[in-house]
Length: 227
Image: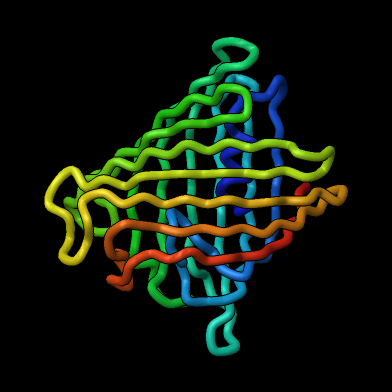
């Protein structure tokens, strides 16, 4: 599955003891909320997370890509949060997340936003809501809601599904619908510390903020190593 989803899954329930984990992956594209983040293809992502026994956690993701034979940073995500177990099957969380991307790999990370979020996880299903006061440009207030779930269909074969909705709380930018939906389905196969996965994702209705084009379904493949 995509690295951001994998990190979110690891952080969904607070651990019994403090732990540090990491993940390195290569993907045919890096997509977030239904659209391709960077023009580079393929991309390499490196993620690290720390989970404290108190329930506090932190994670970071760095995205790198190849553009014109040069390797450059395409973006990053940084998260600080706190999770608490309510019952054996239910946990809640809240935190803050910083996201930044470049329009082209290696250029300045000009597309950035901060979000406050809250969520809950019940068994294998997680729901979150994010609020941003400056989504991709100053003063653009948005809410993003998402539901994500996973199902183990075979001992080492998992299916992950995601649906999200981004809503502008004020006047949306030109050519952009007030509310837009994104979705993703991923099938992954575990091979020891390695994971192979393939996914299909899309976005719509409405135009894309970056390309001003309507969303379409896109297939991606990738491989990851967890440690």
